[in-house]
Length: 193
Length: 193
Image (cartoon, rainbow over all chains, first blue to last red; front, side, top):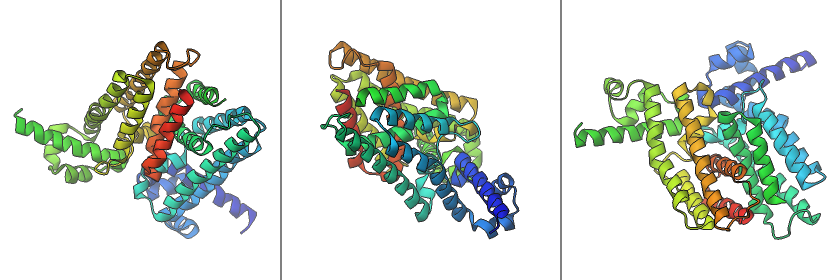
């Protein structure tokens, strides 16, 4: 595929991602996708397959775009405090970025999980597991460095951080207030360190 | 209205609540509601008004059914530990109750907040504020009793607990694992007390 064609394909995929993110799988129609992606019905099916295949590709694209950066912040953090502050700052930037639909595609899809096919379900489960693991290793490193008490249960705390991560994506939809979210971030740090 | 008629009306409203809870506002059609409520289109409009009015009444019904019990657990708790354990246990029971759609109606509606009318938006905002206040007073009482350190910022921690509350409703949709959720509850207690 030529570079121009690849670029056009990625732009269309990005628009599909934003549409599913904003309206959910059930709430998104083929005409919604055609309009937002700026392509015809036949191009859509020819390039991306059906609505379900497009959702899966969009969710993978989202994971690369947002998920990898998040995990790299945790993996490369010099201290627990710096890592958590940077992580939640970036998380809130994505959740509140005005050119994006708000919150998180994975959180939104999780809510109506029952209506998704097995491939998307697996993708969401893996996304949660990968993030939990990233938090777990981040906390373990903090314990090794002596920044966190050795009594801290890294597994349970990683699950709590995963829960907070998704909770932020719900609360921002309603409150949309970054100040409030900084409170949450400070609060986590205060309790952990 | 007679008792029987009142009972039938409440049963229909409960079915509407479950439908919106399961499929969201956009994802729920009038035929879905007619089928689940077991009433005709004309009865639906005559008794509950349009889809939007029905959603508002269903959300208020949900708030009375689930929200009041939650707040009363916090208000009547003898200790912080007992209060938080009972609160999150009940919360998870609701989120995982097999006769219910899973998670929480308010969390689900929050995700697609932009598509709701002003009355529903206000209802959701009030629901979050009321719960934050309940957590705040609960934590303040814990500080007065000496169970929590006076250095704890009750406002920020109440916001964190609100976030965890909604995060649980996302994570349960995917993991559906009460054991995992007990970890979360234990983790909060461990960090706070």
